[in-house]
Image (cartoon, rainbow, N blue to C red; front, side):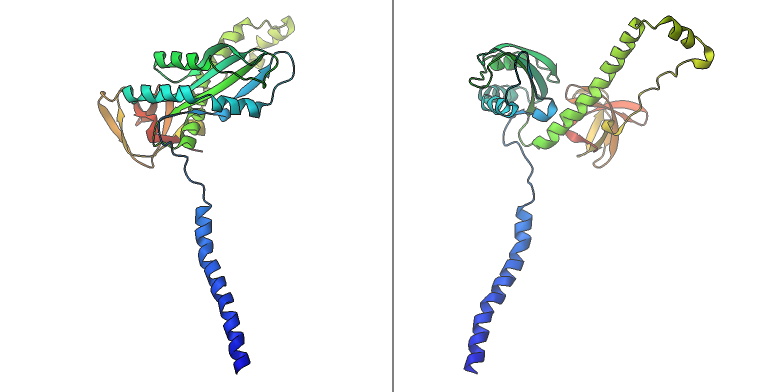
Length: 278
């Protein structure tokens, strides 16, 4: 009996331990779920996924990861500028892409804006001025051109979602530009005589390009109910209501407003109320 009791006593802690381990496993799995990257304040985000690129003009390309880290380390002044400007302009947000010319000593010799959805021209000038002070010592030993995408994110917004918006909205805006460029370039192409004669034949008339269809990249889901306004302005009257969970086709981007179709009529909603459908 004494032997049996001692064996029971020694086995009990193992059972408790296993039960505790099993009860704690759900907690561990819950903690492992990724959390939202919510902006804790108005912040400028360096967004490599939106087109970061380093192009060497002479020798081999420097380590892009180290260049990216150096850009991130120099955003302090720009973030301070954005926090100050956002207090006066609550609608100040969006993406801007810079092109930096960097000399062999790592100094920035020229900065220009190659794309932006930030309507405030004065703030964009401040961005260029701040970026012109950047330096890349010991990283760049021959001239390079850096394409640097930045995004302004308001406090409380999910950074990952905002970056997805910027990427999708960029693709929507680029479509008309590409189409116009193709139409402009087409007449300049001189076809050889034998090809020209074939093109003039009715039986071999080339198929006309079809109108660009609306792909899923133009389809957005409404994240929170919001009025659809007649014009891209809070002062404009409401013509309808976009309900949470519904989906709408975006046909244009006007600053921080999305142009959507509702019952065959176009209207406008703020971009923070919608997210692209994957």
